[in-house]
Structure formats: structure tokens, C-alpha cells
Image 1 (cartoon, one colour):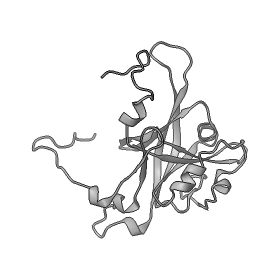
Image 2 (spheres, one colour):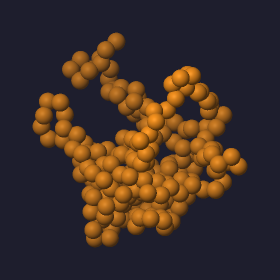
Image 3 (cartoon, one colour):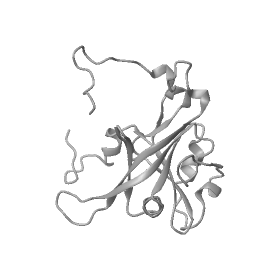
Image 4 (cartoon, helix red, strand yellow):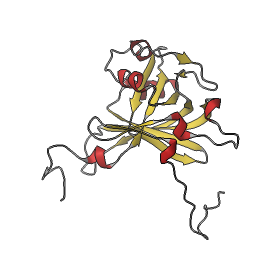
Length: 208
């Protein structure tokens, strides 16, 4: 079958079920007034590692986007199976100035290089400097509905329990949750991990 906005051959849009599972950027940011916001974004991912950069995409200019611009910083905490309820509660559309941390009964922990705190119970967090916000204008033109925020990672917090003796992060042991379509979520588990190496002669492109 084929699906597009005109034919609508399914009762529900399958896009988010196909571009899935998606990691969740649990974004905390402090605005110019000092107000703290915490919001989960499933349109989130890493976009480079030299230097390390991440992006999250906001439908409309919501507080996380606005505060990241005003404060010039944001933090992405890792949402896990153990923190799933707090993550979900923090998505509530609260009035500006009302704390999602308080509403979701989440503790904060200080960051190392940026002002916004991380979620204390999160096993990992990425501290970011805001770089730019890009309006995502559709192909036909018109006003952008989504805005992509790009940040450079300046420090990473990792709970020591999840660092192996070999110096690798055991991602599966953290049990991150990822977003699917509809109301679906998925977990990452260590027993589902497998490893593949690139074909001989491929290798990484040398970095300059």
C-alpha cells in the first residue's frame, strides 16, 4: 500500500510508527527570567560527534526552545524505564513559570558546565550550548510549524554504575525508553544488543 496526506488509506497517520523508535531528549532549560522548564522531545537525536552536537525539534516556539535561546544552554537527560512516569508527567502543558520538576516530583542535580540542572534520577545527561534555531519551512513555502534547535555538547554526565571496566557505557543496562507511533514506547535492553563491524576497506573517514 501507499499512504500520503491526500489518500489517507489508514485511519491513523503511520509516520511516527515508521520513523521509530526515536530517542527522547528530556530537555531542561532556564529562561531570561530564571524560570526552569523540563520537557521531553522525541524528535531528538545526535547529529555529529566532532564536536558532539544534538538537536531537538519543537512544534511551535515552546518554553524549552525559547529558554534555550534566552539562556544559551540546555541539558538533555536520558529518559529510562525507571523514570518513564516522571518523563510523561513532565510533558503536561503547564503555564509558563510553573515547574515541571515539581509537578512530576522530580529532583534536580547541578550540571557541571551549564546553568540548567539535569534530572537527578537520570543515569546520563548531555550539557549543551545552544548554537542555532532553524525554522523548518515546508516544501510548498509558508510559515514553519516546527523549529529545530541545535546544541553543542560541552559535558556529559554518566552514572558510574553504567561504565564497564573496559571504559564503555553499557547503554542497555540503563534501559532507555524510546518513542514509537501512537502511544507506544520501546525499551533498549542489553540482551538485545548485537555488534557488527564495517566491511574491510570501509573504515571511518579520516577526520581533519
